[in-house]
Length: 353
Image (tube, rainbow, N blue to C red):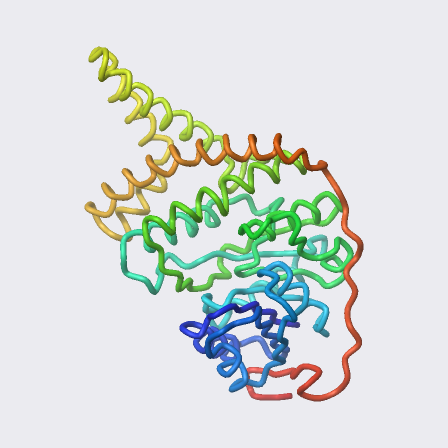
């Protein structure tokens, strides 16, 4: 088992991330931290743990950093996570158990917990939405998730690993990897009980930028390129209908300025929107109360409105760029490693090396 963690200026969370990994119940693994040209104390923090620290030659982003780590790895299974993610003691073991019990599967990913470290509304909102999305996902997936995901080395290297060219710096390199895995005949599973804590802090502007420019736009382009759509995760029928309902609400609201009778349609559309998202809204109320529910409903409505904008931009950018559709990657190759710490330390929760 190889644990691969890319980091760029992650000094605030990397220590707790690594401590959580080394407290895992899983008996034997190596940890590879790939420093993507950090300018803070990230490398010094990584040096305090029995892990293999790799420094990227240039700032290449998370996709390239993960590939660098994979090439240095020795494990038959590669577990990817992020420096602001904290595994629970049984997270890795549950993923490996899923792979063993489902021999036809080549990859598996987990979920965020319902709780997050950041206490502001936007962080709690985004974390709960992500948790809900994976908890209600189909167990057979078509995407991969590098925040908490394990993949057999043969499958990973066979499809060429992560492709930085697919993402343009966005956060969809793992989705693209999942599409290529499925196209190559591999199966991906969702292990809902394998959960991790996310420590990312969101502001409104940061959330807007993340959802539109780092997710909606590149994911739309990716689905067009790969010619893949599935009724799952963020692209379920409920999501598509919610998008149309939210856009309809906005249009009728604008039209009502010139013609007040259009206001009569708003209650019906709001009721439909609430029905389509009733499970998510129920989770909002259960976890954080009625005030958060009302705030979450408003934010979800806004989310679907700006997702429409993101999808339109994705289609326009795709037409302008005129990128080729489905394309394969050359297989990724491992590097030959020597023996000892410089080649990668293999550790266990008991400290074995």
